Length: 555
Image (tube, rainbow, N blue to C red; front, side, top):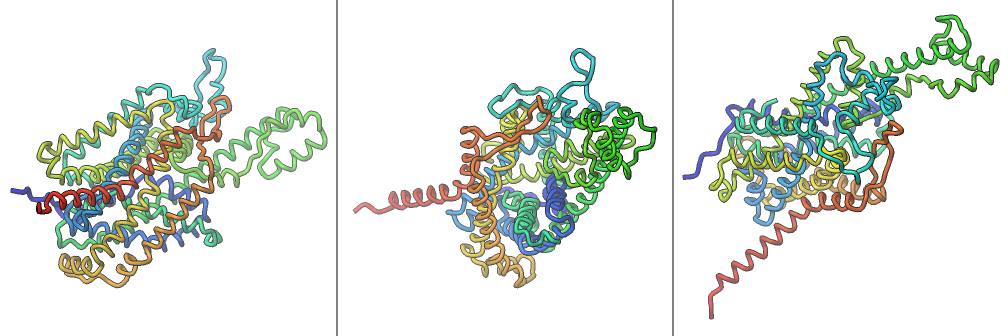
């Protein structure tokens, strides 16, 4: 007798699971960056419009598909058409790629969390050199926070060609991160609860992209979560709630981030003024306190004209202190999470407390997203009668975590951060756009929009409004096609793909070309998921023809 499908204890638990999955690190480290790059508050205009015409409709579509088919991504699209099983397979492959590298962020968060109990914080000061006669040269040329990230945490190599050894401390943190994820999985479904730039087309493209990836569309996680819903659940209301909370969290995170930007910029600016004032005061025997922010530039001009030779000697050491340039510095990703934020935290009162709270928050966001991501992999596997008849869910979960952790050790090598960037930039971008496009076409034009509308009305007792139907059948697919064309053309126009490598002798990042094998890996990452859709369709066609041939009567 077939086992009954597990259900969420109540609708609120399902909503919290979706929010925990959708609200992730991108809300903290990418959305604020986009706001800063594209006009601050004016970026909210394209962002909110894209939320309405793309985010909400596609989120509702995925929740409705999962709730109606009551299966993971592979089974759901196989029900629509056997030729579309590849859509679910592609979702699982992309989710597996994500699982391999995303949990490394949680490992880094654990690493920083453990070091947050030290006084002073280890990234607040530069270490002494080998002779103990001064500070480490690399740290002096960079900064204490950059040094701790690139040298102490990553021990990064000068290029992707120099792989180096596995760093045992980050490796142990990665094991711990996967152990936490596995223990949460064992608890089952109940454990997953947690204006002028408007004329710039890239502002609209990035607004659409941020909505798309922030909600986690295309990974199969939302379909998996919704498959455990009661058929009568109001998935339309859930889609709206999750979308609004996700976007509200992004906006709130931006407010906090800009406050930290302001604190950091002001601190660095005042520190720069103190150093320049001290240098000029000591060099030209000026009166203490004579130099201020208001008269500094005027005095510099006077000293340069009155004492040209003496001023030329100290000129290379005089920094240009500008609050505007400090505020204009835009950073995203790990640079924002582990360098900019830590630089602000080290200058706060009771810095250890703020550091613990901050990295604990990162862990909660990261683990919540990881649980949703692993659900996208495990649900189709446990739904498979062939696999589940031989292995219990605990063993399947353990194998997925073990394999992902083993492969993820690549990211703890000295060149691991470069491979992390490759996976982060290329493993899911084009693939997800194609997956969601085929999903939308499959529901609207293969399964049939009227049939799907009738199913939803029978399930929930509510008719589907014209708005959702227009978005599903026309606007959202066209928008995805536009994004797909933009990314393809962007990759083509970019030419040779490049990456940022850490140059220890300079204490800064330098741009280098990817080697041929890295470019091949990028191509394989994109192709291995996208090619699942046509290859599985072709395989299904061939198998059906062979079976039909075997079943044909012999004359």
